[in-house]
Image (cartoon, rainbow, N blue to C red; front, side, top):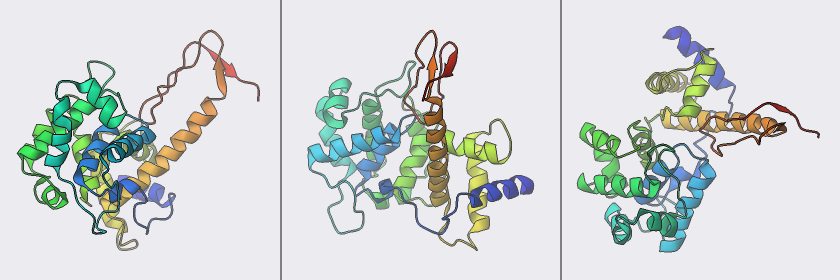
Length: 270
């Protein structure tokens, strides 16, 4: 593992700015329900659409979106469930009215993410998790993790991991496509498993912390994700200059999904 760790640390140093806090405003959500919305809607989607879903809900309900720890009211998971209950079994209406987002958890046999949010929130409620302090106290329970992974479309466990990161778990690393791709590139491998990437990123955080005291695993996760996202967007921008001869190029509109191009393509005129 030492050789792999050294390679990953060398690549992490290329990111730069390693001794500053995570810059994502999602880390400052004012209440736990916003963390649920973000954790579910962000899986396999452009993050802008996730931010819009959180903002739409907060604007609609008159809830403060961020500013954690600034003395404002912290809304509970039960309050969140009560807002959604009138829409139970009317998932598309919920998706449109509450989140302005009709994304599915999967393009094949997926459910609306709005329904997954409801089921995620009611699961937290069953485990007595209402506010941030509850999430930090009980969020890592194995039975809670299993219950959330049993929600349709959440079997990877990524939404549970990310929910806890957003709620304040500094040891969390989300082995999503951005993070696994970064680790695989650093090790010159075609792919790595999420569990392997998560373990190695945690080890890198621990190794680098003597030099960068604030580089907790969740902060390093965020910096890797941001770095890899920018690289992916730069690559997508370059590909977008290509046009297809026989059929349009198809962009899945998803920074977490592969880009698909149909037929043969040629460089578009500049």
